[in-house]
Length: 266
Picture 1 (spheres, rainbow, N blue to C red):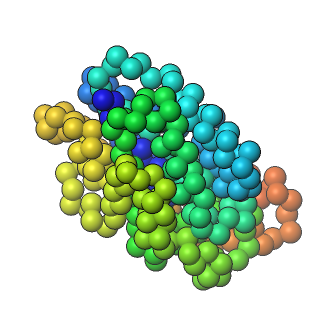
Picture 2 (spheres, one colour):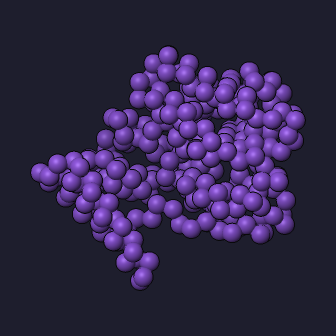
Picture 3 (cartoon, rainbow, N blue to C red):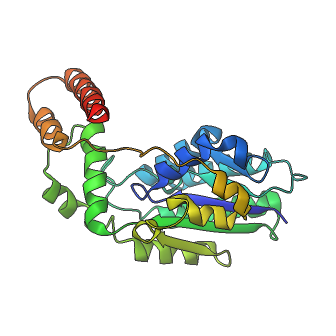
């Protein structure tokens, strides 16, 4: 039986740190697990994000087809467990493309489960791991992500009001559990992992049965997507100014690069 763990989100819940740690420790982990990152299944994440925008049946069919292609590429004779790591498997981050919440996630996870069964058989050891986060810090982090990458002009309070359901993870998790039954779904709150030995990656290492001696040797990941203090207001002002989009994007990139250099020297 092939064990497949899908860490599908949610955005801004430590997923980038998990992926960075997996990437930094690939040589140590490789003998024990087949860990696939977004670059390994880019066509699938393009399909999941497209469906989160359109919600059209044809887009969902593409998700199924791309997921089947990922599972078909696995060597069935390889006994190592498999992990797919990408928050984009749940679609776009709410706030992009007028997406209000994670309403597309249950249908997307259902297609991943169906594709895994179609390729690997109903006995596949499929497990969905979902990381969550308290609403207030989630909104702060999501707002920063949207602000720096898109020309949004609302303030943080209006952003949270417009996407009030985006950080209400319990109903989404319940919807995913119903959609992929009988396969297990495990939500883990980021706040509960602060003291965990390997931080946000700890539940994934548990699910993959990584040996204790390997876990102890893993190098910690560098902090991911750190927000320099004070840049929210700067980027919001840039978004609201009359400069063309290309100029604003260039100014944001330059400002962020300088702020991170200064932060590193502090």
